[in-house]
Image 1: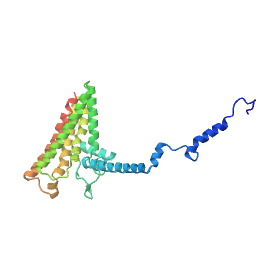
Image 2: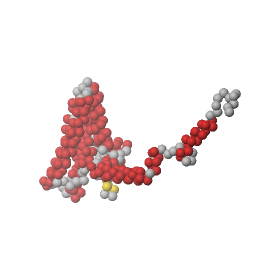
Image 3: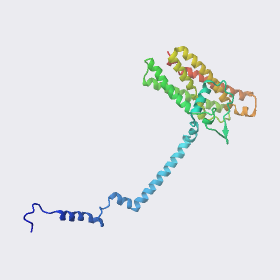
Image 4: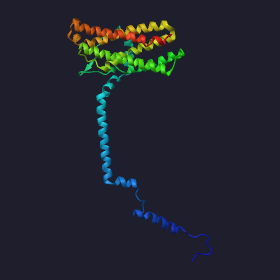
Length: 281
């Protein structure tokens, strides 16, 4: 019988019995395993997960191989292997190529050394940064003249890329028609042709600061410099056989190679002016 002086019933024993009853289904007093844990403990599911992991690894390996076939990632790493000293020397060479004597690219075990070890080696860092800076400077010039618009800036970038693509295709076709055996690759052409953006930036900036006179003076200097730079650089690439054997540049084939070299070099100042003259007023 209940104590008449007790105000509330003692339910602690019933709760303990209830809690104990809730823990007993697992057998040891622990909560029952969740469905996810039961699924992972299943041997079939473990085998399926292992098989899926192996398929993912094989797919990643296949993608890496195909990427190297279409996008030479390993080769691109070579063209971006630069440092601050190389960039400074290369920019000086682009503006003042007249005093430079040794234009030969250095090799180590039949492989060209990284650009940071040889100022004559082509790189993609300077052309890429110069192209982006050229677009930004073009936007600045258009903004100072109250002519800026996203469409016009996009047209400026697309036209520059279109001209670069046409240059590369024209040179590759010319090399094929002239039957030139050279180690000059498509990436090399993009690098050499992209150096002209450095001079274009200088010309537009001087035009913004000092008007037409500053533009023509600086751009004229940069045009002559890039012409000399391209002549001395491509001469060793396109005329590699004749230079290596010490054969004078005579005969129809060698003359065609020389004309091709001069045509590529002469096209750089023309494009530098065509892509910048409308930005300075």
